[in-house]
Image (cartoon, rainbow, N blue to C red; front, side, top):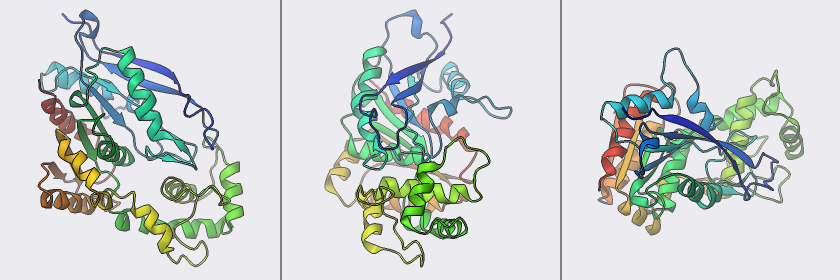
Length: 341
């Protein structure tokens, strides 16, 4: 009988994150799933980097639940049933005190894309028996993690040869603009309408503080996205808002900076199209009742792929944005099928 699977929690010390502008810890706890039988021989395994959504970090995937499987339980079931080949799964921590990094480099939060690509991937390849080539390395995730998976695959086809995007952020006109009004209403109630007041609020709050101010999430969500998509070191907050903080009027020049990060806009660039052509698997899914209208973004993205004659798999299921971990069954099976000799 092969030995069972295990979870190793790596305490990964990052040099790149050492002086990040938010003062977040540079040392990150990174869970690594090793499949059944890993300790029984010298086999090398494919690797999946599984990215969590906004406000999440890798350890979130280990949470015990009365009504769902942990990622270890899910992978054990799929592997032991022969539906997924044995593989290593890495769960990065790219969390920031604003709730997330979108897995991008930016002056307002830190170099999280470089951390993932230049530090964490080589570290895992040195430490574990991986098949250290793009054809056997995938990136996957849900929500902001799905966005991160798609962006990383589009930018680094030499690192990731397969991707799975569950309900990833795209078509920003639909998925973010409705939350601009929530931000404006919240900052108005909290008297945070000047850049200086907002900057002070962001400097003073602690992610673990309790109780949090009313409508806290409405403020931190758009602040975090602004930090990622429209950073500005000269601004009081370190970023520009895509709208006037009092009138709410859209600032077209800042909004265009956001749109440059939209996967649908990125498909206008030849280098990203070529990267997706090289990808062995492009798997996307989304609930047909997604609360952030991400199913419309997924449909548009897939239509663009079809127009470009780029193969993809898209599955739309009856559901919303939350409690859809069961969809990992589908993506891991698809990824496993792409890892063929």
